[in-house]
Amino acid sequence: MDIIARARSIRISPRKVRLVADGIRNLPLDKALNVLNMTQKRGASVLNAVFKSAIGNAVNNSKKSLDSLKIKGIEVWDGPAIKKFHPSTRGRVHPYKKRSSHIKIILTDDHPSTSSGEKLMKGAERGTKS
Image (cartoon, rainbow, N blue to C red):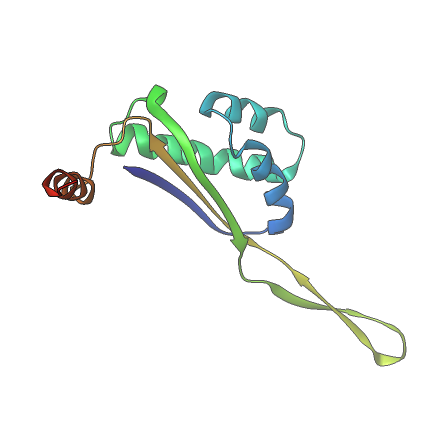
C-alpha cells in the first residue's frame, strides 16, 4: 500500500527542489532524513517537512511500522507562477516569473500484500498447459 504526502504551491523554484530530491531518491528512509537535516539548501527544509508528513501518515493513519517503509518515489513539478515586471529605462519593462512547486512523496512498505490482479494472474498460469 502506498502512503502519499503532498505540498502544493511552495514558493521555491522546482529546479532548486529537484536538486535536493535527486540526492535522496534511492536512499533508505533513515539516511534520507539525515541527508535532509544536514543539507544547507532551502529546498531541503521543505522536503524534510513533506517527508515527515509522509512518515506521520504511514505510522498514524495506515498503522505501518517505521522499519518497513521505503521511498517509492519523489515527484517535483511546476506550480503556479507569479508574473511580475521590473521597470526599465525609457518606459520599458522586463518580465520575470516567481516560480512555485508542487511536491509529492510516495512511501511504500517492504512487505506488499498481493493484489487481486496478481492472484488472478497466478491462477491463470496454473490453468495453462505447457
